[in-house]
Image (cartoon, rainbow, N blue to C red; front, side):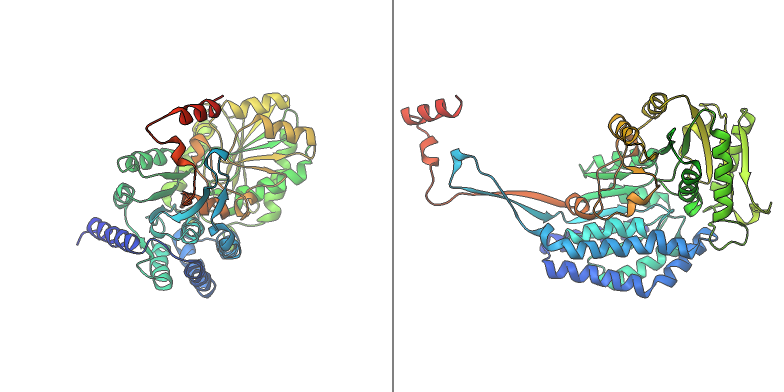
Length: 468
């Protein structure tokens, strides 16, 4: 049986199971979440090893910090709040229809699809899965072809922990992912690039499958005039170098006040050296996922240099890194706007710096570009914070930090416009994978008879009153 046939058969079986048993109670959902958590704790070393092998080297500490911990935290948050989330919500009834009652019942959608990118293969599979399970659904997961070891391991572990009637994991080439997105899921969540997101939405449209798109874009770090440069440099460097910049919410470029650029460059170099004093054999520093992505980043840097940009690589020991597919923090400035680095999401440890003359100009620079997934503001000035929050639109905002909004379980996560649509995480994730079913209950004794045909004088007098 071909891969596509296996995929379609699995979907048909899971959809049939969902139609036969469309509702899972609180105990069943909590049990599934508990099994998922137990599996993660027991298999954390194997998972970290598989991810590292797929990357060529991935810091096991980063895997635990950026993938294992937030996955477990999300599970525990859902377990803690699930009873309240599932509770039917009472809604008001118009005085004209009293004594009827209204409520909203969160109902499982059925079978959801989850498409996972390569950069955080555990968290970006389990984050949506936790939301789907909390909402009472079954799920099919398509892992990235760039992380085959992680995909194979998760297929085994998840299906053992939850059962193949609850979750199925698929691994394979791009063509299988394309067929996956054409299945008539009850909801499809895709995490990846904006161009591929457009293709996913087109594929889902044939089935009118609702989609949540978690995309990317060029997330700016705005260093305000009042910012402490040493502090700003530390949080920017830490965010940019986590997973070697291969993060959808990594700072993509920095806006710095004119005249302070060189001071920020020096501060970034100092911060990067402090965080990663060596690179080649440093177990904390992650490699670029594949030769193709390494060559892409190297080519973009050389393209910027050829276009007249200044480039400074922060390689504290001057090590040879190409064979290990490790790329140092590379600062770029005076880069033309039409260079690829300035137009495309970088997804690597390359950081352009752009000078601005005043805050209005910086805000205008951000607003003239596609709306980003995240915006990072480095400022202690309340008026500056308010101005940036009110005058820009982005998926999320972090003040005086980078990326940590992603692992706040009570905050929704999602983009806007080219950086995505829809939300998940926490309660918003539960809502994304639920149908909020409105229920109207009519008691035996009611006033409906007064507005039934044949319409007489009473109906006319009532309607005149109702629309007065």
